[in-house]
Image (cartoon, rainbow, N blue to C red; front, side, top):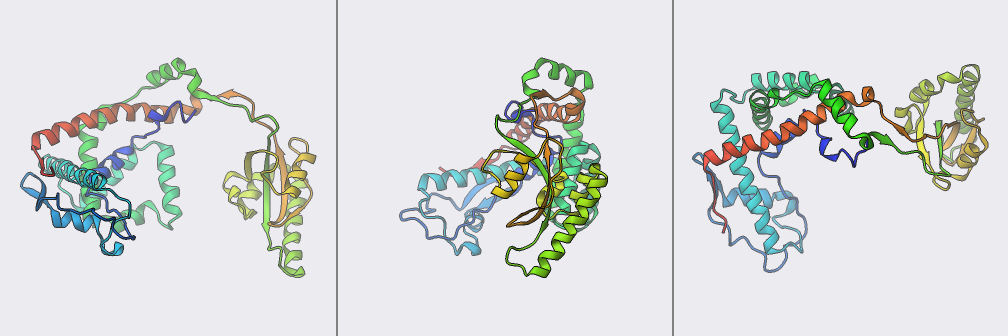
Length: 351
């Protein structure tokens, strides 16, 4: 699926969490260089905004904009006009976030550790499989699991507020929208260009490799050990070439190991000379002998170039259904939030 053609559809149902996060407290502007001349906060009243009996004060705004880490300064070059726009946005976000959280609480979604656990788990149940996998991988990089993340965050007030809002959104808005397979297929059939995959550029190449890293300044013994490991892997591949992807995942020290060794498409000049020449000399599907470069020892397989194709409906079905649903949900949430904030009659006092 082309990213540009379906940019509006890239959000998933799990984006309700992001939407809730955007309605949380105003973001801190990190600043570490001297304040520009003539820029000041004289335009801010003592009460910047209020809604439902809650107030955002000038002091609170300054604490957000001028944190201790920034030594009480904002970036040089920031104009008075820009500073005013930032504070108006902060005040508007405060009004919106407060109104939404109040509405959620009144509807029975009071923030608590119990709701945080329940709401978070419910969001995982309704998230598309591919999105859930992305979340798990992201946490794994931080050495965390879904369980450990939830245990760590469930007592955090900001997280509790976020999940309360998310649960409120899900049960009052999101769950009302579903995209059937029939509707997704109709979209797929009506937008064929959106699912076309371009062929590889003329003159480009594709290859996968297994890299056994060794520093070019390493001593002879270290290099010999690394090369011996590469030779052992090559011997296995000579017996069974189908093991390439599996061995790349387990043994390669290149980040491409996450893609079974695939480096994707590249042009001449993109790779170091020794590597590129080895690829040029290979036929499609053929595996090289050991190739030494400044990175270490490589076992290279030349891969077939990709021709222009079209993703099948089966390949895009899940993501397309999730994206089409989110398109509907996004519009509904905006209307829902506007209704709540309008009813709350919040005020921003910046002139």
